[in-house]
Image (tube, rainbow, N blue to C red; front, side, top):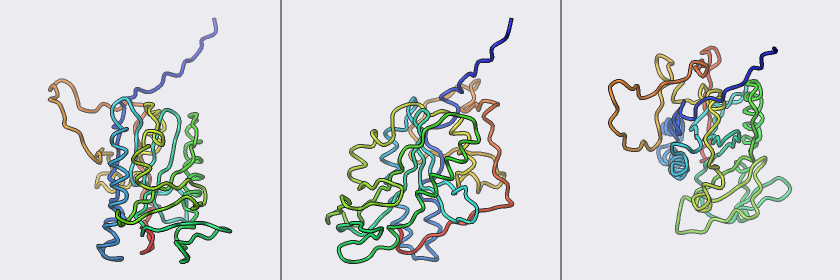
Length: 259
């Protein structure tokens, strides 16, 4: 009798629902660009992480914050990746001056002023790189359309993105994202094999001295007492994480106006 191998899906509790530190790499740029702009960039990522925290609860999707872009020759980072079931979506958070943003013939303006950093192709490159990385896992997945989340640096002034067309992504204001977070994030438990494939990209984990993954959530919930006989976290053997080699470190680069 011919034996049939059955692929058993990994448990939904293999990894936390929030992994990494939002805005960590931006906050390190205060010396180069000034504390005010670095603080604004960090604030945008933390606001997005705070909105996602309501969805990324046990039994829900998983979000990874502040990941290196796995593409040689490109020094950049990915702000957030949300995984719901087999669906993967890249999120980018910005803190911009309020105004009317519009794109025509590939050029974006705020009012009449040209805003060159709004026309970067980083989101499209990130999608290509993540899609290639996950294709090597042999796990079925679906890449959802990336979302650029723009938070206003002045809540009292109007921010309009109706005619803004970022390359390779959909744009939405932080206010709209907050009201429809579940729509963008999904509500299914993340495929843990996809999570395991992306964890080595999380910058806060790569910087640990012993290179052993240590999980930190953006907004850790209160923890219930744990029995001495039950470990807090038991990773599955087949989901063990191999850190990326030190031979090709990535350096995050930002432009001073691109927060």
